Picture 1 (cartoon, one colour):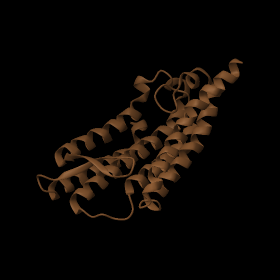
Picture 2: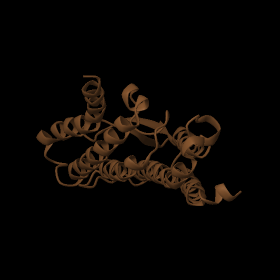
Picture 3: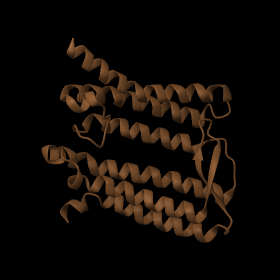
Picture 4: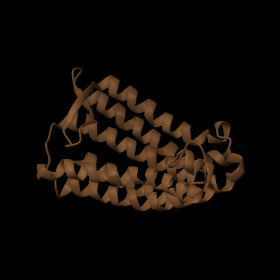
Length: 219
């Protein structure tokens, strides 16, 4: 019971999210289509029914929470760094549940109000998520489930630390680019693909960096 209290923020968010889902399900017509996927240009390219979107949303919010909360049960590395994990897991759970819930609610709002605004909030939300995750990355102990998990980071503590320290900067920069893409460059279509590619490269570069560290130590 003491441990579950550390996750009360996530549990409160899930309850509020469920209340919001009930509101949208009652407010939307039976044939409403809820956006469920955006392409690289920020255009909606897939829809669910309101029931399908609600079931998916509930499953994802509970699944994300349980994935973090049950780590002591399935992670062999947890006991080695229990105190470090418990300093970051409640915050990580809160961030993931919060941003997924906001993205889901944003989708339902589009379905209900059918308004087009000059700001693409999906990129803003994803950008903020990347920034928050970037700030958590250097604090994550070496493990098999959370973080930048490559064969080289998992095999070497120093490699893990250096890769995650670099990854933190890369995630934050990518997040800022995504926010700018959603707010400033939304109508500049020539920049859309360029910014997306830059963000992806920045996020993926730590994978290559971990291999370069490995090769440098080998030589």
